[in-house]
Image (tube, rainbow, N blue to C red; front, side, top):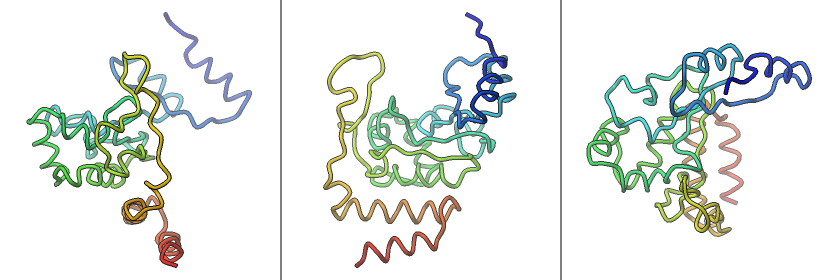
Length: 195
């Protein structure tokens, strides 16, 4: 069914001012929807896990992004980065290994680094990917109901233990090295953690 289009977003902006809206432009998107998103200035979405099923022209590969996108290693509806790797078809895993220069042990960091180093306006990572967790930590399986969907919780020990501190350090270094965070703030945080 055709919606109100631009008039709806003009009314929202008139009533509330500019809003930080991200358009979920995944799946079958028609040219008129692309035009509406672009006319509104809303960033679209790029999911790294979707990038490795084609060739170098695939729209989800970081070198093909435009700045007005938000890149995700995966979303709540995807497997974790590590789980994706473990279950990906061999051809996709091989392409990802070459493109990201990674293996099983560091695919999550390679995806995070590729996202941060892209021109995307924003880069988003589920905590499961920051911690390199396998499929058992997946948030949601679309098309299914009940447990284990939306049941995953981050244990306190995952952040306060050595692996959490190391994950925070690595994420901070990647964010600062890619210009998505300031080195001076990273240094202060690392010094505080060392005390």
